[in-house]
Length: 439
Image (tube, rainbow, N blue to C red; front, side, top):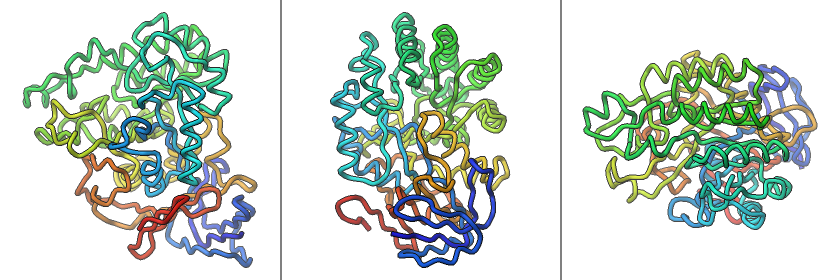
């Protein structure tokens, strides 16, 4: 089968390409990238006026299955990913039961292959049941297909266990994804410890809740030689410490979310739990440092930390509601509107942070549009304007602080392995999984 993508602005960090090109796909593989390809094809896509990027890669999502299917399932999460332009996603292990065994990794892989053509690569738990005590079998988990280990949703609070885990991860060669939060220090906090928390009368979460654990984990990585990835960085001092660690030569990478790049505590509407996220929305000073870190390479990638919840859970009010934002279907528009359109980052940098470098961090052969590579492709109309409407989300989680925001940047096609898994043509959206199309 042949697919020909015509007249698109091809943006490929691997080859430093930002130019009008055509792309020919044959049997799911990129066969040619050139100007004015004139060959017959079964499917022809006119991408004039659109950006054609490597399929987006998100290293941090929560698909909730098994155990919390009322929030999300692998099927609905995959649909949300496709609608958001993502062709590869990595679900975190905080399910019930946790993804802490070969059998659970197999379950995620098999269920994913059953329902979707996008790539779903599981992250396994650092400890059994994510209880912070008994380290899982990293070698077997890695061999089975886990691309990293993480205790996301919590930290391994025992430094001795954390060190042993990093040492074993270094021996196996599997990355450690660190959720840096001192649970004891966070206590009953529900938002950033600042002026807004005082105004609303809520318990706050200090920057040091994150900073202390970032410092500890960087020191343990230095001690063990582990490949460390810092999840959802939110504070200015975390950025400084990561920069210092990189300067020293540590094998460390870091991510930031679209919401931490674009929102602060000042944006929180009173008692609207759609703004409740962990780590919390911080100050303008923190946000500015995150943007600076993203631009200078201290922060390597953008990840959504897609955390869907049921409507009734988020309706409980700020104190009682769970932490989390449903982020897969808004990420491109938020980054395009608030960063690319405002010349904070270039389209090439966006593709690097959302596709090429994420793929490199977990060592997969994705994130490029080079000839011979799998045809994972995202086509974006950067100038299409619309208003975010959470009711249209494919995810079961409608919890977003961006509902009602006017944005630019619309996904027109998501192509995984040469197959169209999402299209949005003339206002008609189609999501295709392995059973039936969903309009």
